[in-house]
Image (cartoon, one colour):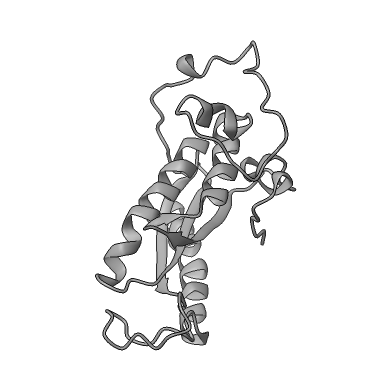
Length: 180
């Protein structure tokens, strides 16, 4: 397990390469209905194979808490010519996405954009999206009784974690049974 922090090493030089795995779980909490930027930026580095700030620069964006100079685009890589149709198959590595969310107004529906975005980012790396798990997660230290889920100060709780564990065990077995 690796927790991404708002620091250069986590985003620019994570201590692993997701492309070396045949099964991963990628997850995030939500900020404005989207995964945390630090998680997206780290994953985009795997997708592009370069510093994610290079791509952000094309949109006049940056990662403000990283002060290292932004490298130039490697001469052998022109992002405008890197696109091609991608087809994921039974031998593709597999992905499960986890999201914790407050869901005050609409509940689980509020997590869907984040699930889709994380899945899409990892599909670009070659992972086949096989499942998701979304559960409420504490946002404020306030019981919030009039919200969709009510008091979520203790979430995710033991029951939520057992459901997530079951999904992690179930999905790879399901895929293995289809191959046999």
